[in-house]
Length: 334
Ligand code: KG4
Image (cartoon, rainbow, N blue to C red; front, side, top):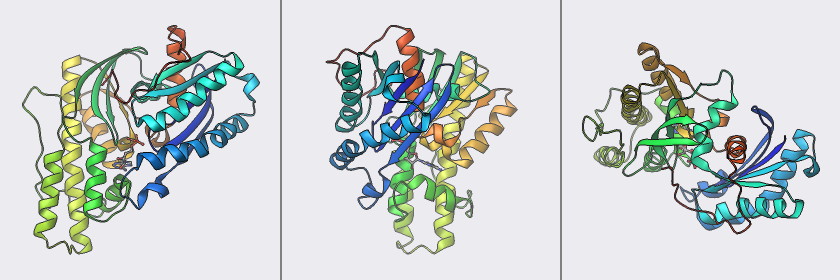
């Protein structure tokens, strides 16, 4: 079976061709970062217009790289939500239209399910059940994953997502968009103990997150510096901010593992590309005898391969999308 998968939930137009049992034949991602960078964040109208321009070439490229044509496809999977509705509609409508014209089955996939299962696209794969931390520009949540269709949310952010906090702090420091990569690069030359930024725990038993207070503390610190920070001071702010985020993410993940009793942890989402998060989480999991599964950064950020895999399991479960199925902005999983 060959699956054509499409992802357009935010600012990346992506398509992939996948064989079940997790072989990725192709995975193409067209980023819109350059379009949105000068605005310091994503402009939804520009995002959907760019998806319209790119959807056809990106799908054609994915098919070409896989060495196949549409005639060889058996199933179409596309992100149905959550995300920017104008962006989602481009990919999801495209998928439904191709499926209808070709007489192919089509499945709508929750973007969160893609992140929760992306670790199954790599070797070694985690066995079920496992605890997953999904941390991106729109999400910071912990889940218990019992099988490819059963996800229970354990906690989530009550305000900003961690990636959003990285992006907002980067904006305060004029580091461009998206801010995560720039902050983690500069943090490597900074002192993580230079500034004691707050860690929001929200109570001993809570698995929820909050990053808006941290962001405000960074803004207040920058203001107190007169906004003319020398390079070493910027590096120290980046390192201290990053350490505060990583501390909370890792502590809560280990607390979630204690609660679920799982011996496996999975990391996903764009912030999973953060080297400090990967290092600290790996150390703490090893100390606690918990196996950690971290997909390669290309599978952590938005991609269509993970949508194809999650779509395959939905197909096996009999969850086909009708032609009038609609995109949704909020995930029922989250
Ligand atoms: O999952 P993703 O590609 O897309 C959305 O959430 O839409 O995640 C993007 C987020 C952005 O907020 C970006 O700043 C963050 O992931 N990010 C990072 C790093 N690389 C990307 N955050 C921290 N450190 C990084 N190295």
